[in-house]
Image 1 (cartoon, each protein chain N blue to C red):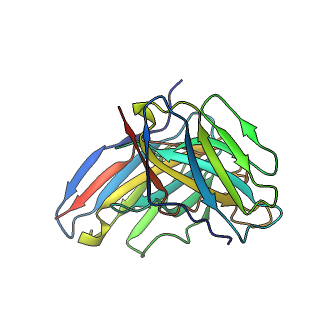
Image 2: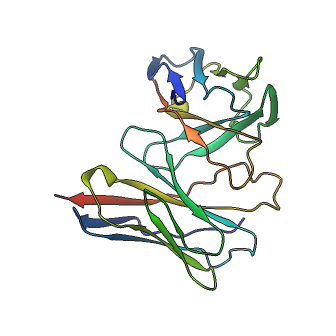
Length: 116
Length: 113
């Protein structure tokens, strides 16, 4: 079946430009996560949705980062006024239920963002 | 949060077994031990998880020390496709944020043909 998909796969932005990254989770999955992965590092948690509710946004690095999941399926991560330090791979993951400690998270391929 | 320690890198020959260690000396009694791997240019993928007993699935085996302060991911016959970064992650069900995966730096596995 279809896994998690993300678009675009690559994005080049000029510093100061706004970008929007899309995530299509596995159909029916309740939980959705965004992670940021800098070059050579492990992914770092950004935010968590349960259906349309954003239950945790503690990992968002600044108020320039905004995520939404208005209908409880597709999610968009928006970065306003991009800076060079925002360059990273942005990973989306989904899980079937409410994200419990035994639940598997299924990851998309990521969007590689380069800010010039 | 309890932390994990893994070697930065390991090498293996194709078709030989690989043992990837993870130390977690401050693990709590309720922490689940999860392993994910990340192939080049892909998102992480789940490998296996366990609590106290050793676990086997089609991808790998997980051997957990009796005191739970360490664990070992075992790939029984490494293939070139197993070259990836392997992450050992603890998840504590007592924590409100147990939904969060906290990745360290992982172990980069190189498989030689």
